Image 1 (cartoon, helix red, strand yellow):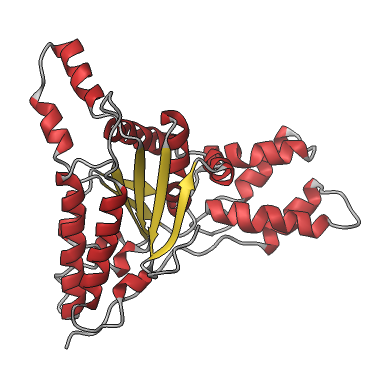
Image 2 (tube, one colour; image 1 turned 90 degrees about the vertical axis):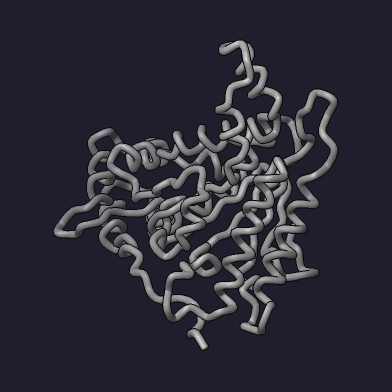
Length: 315
């Protein structure tokens, strides 16, 4: 469901959701990130389980627990365009909802939160967004201490909202907005709320150092390597009757080859190459290896992202 009343959130979606489940399952090569996010969510939703673990294996409450709980629940997804950052951020809440058998709500912050540059506008909008998330994340817990629901706050293209305040040309309103963003993240941490903040960016170096320091983990998303491309393409190509040699050939040609220093992104494979293969065959021929070779030549990978300056000029 989309929030149209305030414009602060581009989308508000509840999980479980079958579409999100399919997209999450299709993300190959990201297993360690998936496992870490699910474990973090499990501990946020059931904080008592940490104490139970500590007493079971160490016979006391460890100081480690306090260090863990005091961290901001912030995760940074950094990497090139098309490498799965946003797709994972938009869908892992579904896996959490299914595992915990509770409702998880995704709040996707809109870039409209930057405002128009009016004094105090950006700060007000960001503060309002975090207040809304905080209120949504504070329903009563179950008698067992487990939370009844959880929140994922997604800030895509985070470098547009959380640019480094060290930039000399940065507008004062943007600086104030970054301060509000930091306060919002810290507020979620001190409240021990079942909320996770995910920031996605193509420009990790552009994020404010205070934001980067607060991240529990910064996940680096890269273009799929040969094994990951093989895992992604094999089921589809096998269904089409390709043999192992032909599959390996397609996998190889979607990597760094023929003098090209970069291979295909996940979105290149899923949104351009495979649909292009279908369209090339439809409506009067079957998909073949020769046709796949032609399609690969006609659909080269997206060039790596080139950072450009963002933000308003300082006044």
